[in-house]
Length: 181
Image 1: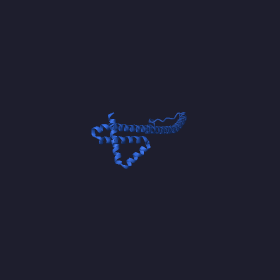
Image 2 (image 1 turned 135 degrees about the horizontal axis):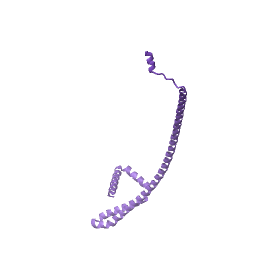
Image 3 (image 1 turned 60 degrees about the vertical axis):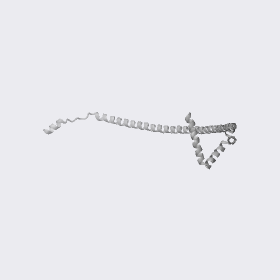
Image 4 (image 1 turned 90 degrees about the vertical axis):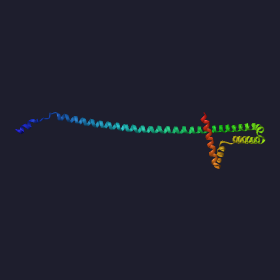
């Protein structure tokens, strides 16, 4: 009795006749769609990789093109800057020479007044200073920028302390001029 009770509580089902046949094509179709999806996914990955390689190559080419353009432009700008600096240096040399000549003329014009007020000896000092400034202005006009650069290097070699002092004085004067503006 116990055996029949146990058997009766768990009923046995019989599979339907067509259910095994239906499950096999569904599994085959599911397997086929999975492999097709994988192949499509792998194809998409390969296409993405190829696109990334192409994009990298294109970016490298553009970067090289921009780099060469920048180098060409920088060379042009350097040449332009050198030309402009040369022009400004020549203009500065001319202005310095004019300023020194003007100072020499002012001192020479006032030498007579110095004679009257301070004596002939101080007037002669003023005339000597005026002549020295005039000679310096004419030497400055006659020298090229390269010669002036060589003279400046020689001055620094001979007396570096004086060169540092002059540079400090020039820096101080430039700072004062810029501070006023």
